[in-house]
Image 1: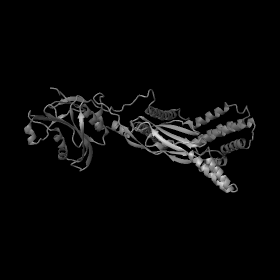
Image 2: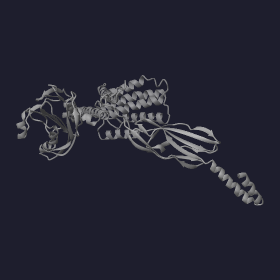
Image 3: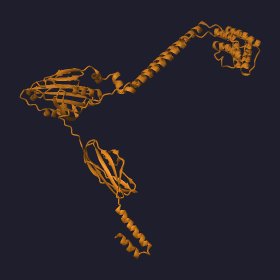
Image 4: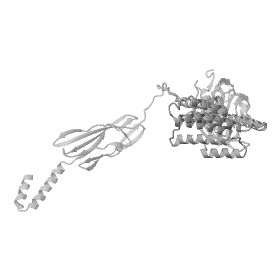
Length: 549
């Protein structure tokens, strides 16, 4: 039929090329429509349990030459993609059938919707339908599977490793060793053989020069350098404390002035010989002049006489001067001792500061403060705990200190119903940690309502001065199977002297066993971590004894 239509069209429009092209385009559009692409999605189950996987399939039917892009990544949220498989291809009736599978899961129970997914074919988007999925909890049969409380976290030994504090300790030891080394070195330096007197030192320098064989080696510059140094050093120590740093002209001018003022008894010949020796030494050192060996030996002999004349020219010190020198030496000795003490104290303080810094860096400020300065509840926590039985019916509990018998006021109507009551207390409501244990034995015909007793706790706490009370309640079972009600929360205790509000936490266990009422109360400062650990340990140790009697 299509062939006849084409032939008929050609007969009437053979001369009209434009009409033919329009017809061919129309024909091709019908041909494309017959091969139109399609996209669909399905899952293997609409209900799963937490952690199970859903197989999500996208099926695409299209032409072989078409490019198809499947969704990836976070497009399946709120479900998570566990795995994305490569698409399978099947050729059918001249077209391709592409099948891509995804494995999805979810770890929270609830009802979810897998959103519509976008598939690109020839850069044209096609969308799947959204699919609802239900994720259910895993039901546990508690009659067959026992439930246990969550165990506290424990440190796992990672094997052998060098702790951080050891490195800090090593650094402190090295620093302390360095300080000790410097102190010992200073003491050794101070304890060395004392310096020779000026004259003896000058003679020793000249003797050292004679033994040096510098003249034999023709090292004239070094010879004159040591020769001038020996006499300048004597002059510097004994007469003029700038003898080593002054020029030759300045030094000779100083000696002539001292001679003119009568302070030095020197002859002009001695000063002149000294000037000539210093000038030759300057020429040898700076102008590379080389006096002959005979002149050098003569200058060596003259130097000794010059030093002798300088020594003789200085008047003997008076007794007052000697006493002043002695006082000066003693003052210097005291200053040296004081300096050593200061250095030792500073070194000790530095070592202590570094040690404390190392401990704070590795253990934390709170640990260092509580360990070395002391903390009352930390000492209780780490001390020797005591397990005792209290009251009737007997309640066994482990506490850091023995509870002391006390008294509480009970309403008259309660006293009429009971056989007796006992109360045991440690601490106070204003301290970091407070414990109270009470037992009441009722007469046989009394039916005690535990819930009503718990409802009255709020009023009782208010009567004791607590305010801003937040109260929660849950069932509680002791290690030996006694069932009760646990009341816990926060409150503020007011200091009657300062009016300060102290933020506290509290835990109160309530039991109605063997015709009696047992209550264990622990109140502690919410900012005190040690008190919180004490409370947990006490609460977890409670047992009601002789339940089956």
